[in-house]
Length: 326
Image (tube, rainbow, N blue to C red; front, side):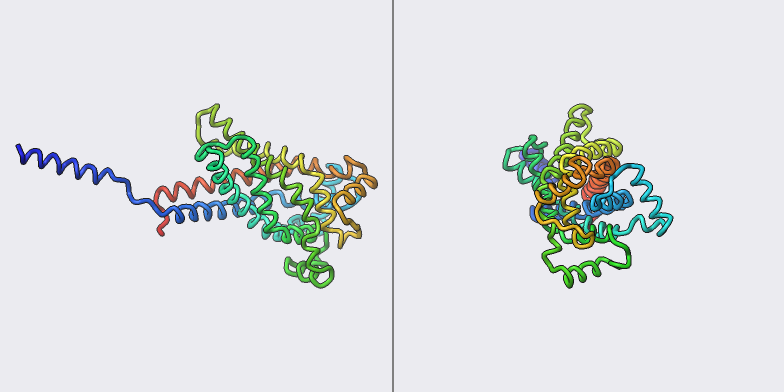
């Protein structure tokens, strides 16, 4: 009898040992791995999205910084003339600066958005769950503001390259050197304030809309992950709403960034707005190129969000399958 009890106790002990979960990684290591995944996926997503819509983006900037009236017909005529005159690759002029800027920008934005979502979730008691509306908006705004603050000079350089001929600036470093020598370091932050004021509603509304659509999709379909085409549609809607809400400040930002090479002189945000409205009209001036944004913006945001989610999920599955060794 004693022998049987001893054998049963040994069996229970062995079962208990076998049932113990494997030792987890330190919390700091797990957090850094997640942050690194977000940085890599964000950079990749941003580079892909901007390259896809680069010709439309360049065309929009050219109209934004000129007094010429915008129309879809004139925009596509400009694209055609550029192609005929300078070749196909000229449509991507400045895209190297765009990718050089947008990869760290998107990496920081997506990574900080994940971190802000986690922090706000803990603060509001929604850890591991979808955030309520205001914290959802706040996470997007904080992520966009963080990314802009850390990468703004690259956006300035990208705008200069988009509106000038190759003879003026041969590469990214050439732009930096000439600005330092001819206009001063402060020029690299010209248009910074309208950018910050614009990115707060833009990033907030964009991330809020995308996260909200994903949440509603999950509640309706009971599927935790949308299909790629659904993600693309959600991102397109988010981009359309976000960019429309903040577009006038985008026009002001581009005018102030390129003032040194276009001959315009703009000092303040309100002064720039008044000058544009007086010379070109309120709607035709401050919303110039918006229809082009309605075409390229949803595509860019849709591609960016979809690429990020798919890449992030792929890395998560690889981690779960223990494909990476530490």
